[in-house]
Amino acid sequence: MLTLPAEITYACAAKCLPALVAAVQKETGAVVRVDATPLQRFDSSALSVLLALRRVCVRAGKRFIAENLAPHLQELAALYGVSALLLDPAP
Image 1: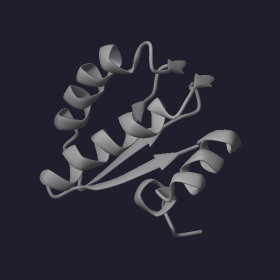
Image 2 (image 1 turned 120 degrees about the horizontal axis):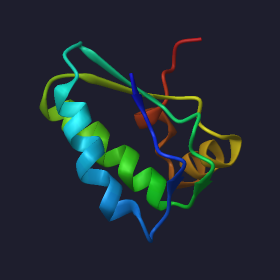
Image 3 (image 1 turned 30 degrees about the vertical axis):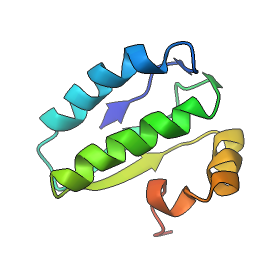
Image 4 (image 1 turned 180 degrees about the horizontal axis):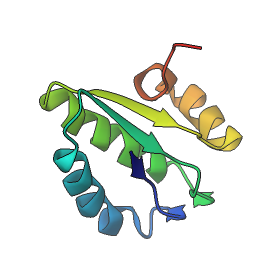
């Protein structure tokens, strides 16, 4: 399972994305889970990073699931209409 950094904002998203993409590419399973528990400082750029990671997974034929998103990040995902792309719909 991948773990997000403590901060993903506009100021640092471009710097953290390459390392996260590389980590996703190293995942060997059919499902890539990303743990957002450490993510404490974020803006909508965090959604962009998560969607970019999802695209990498889709291209590789893998399923992408973001877990433990902060409530505010879940609200942003819903506002932008991307919740279904990031979250596991299973209970």
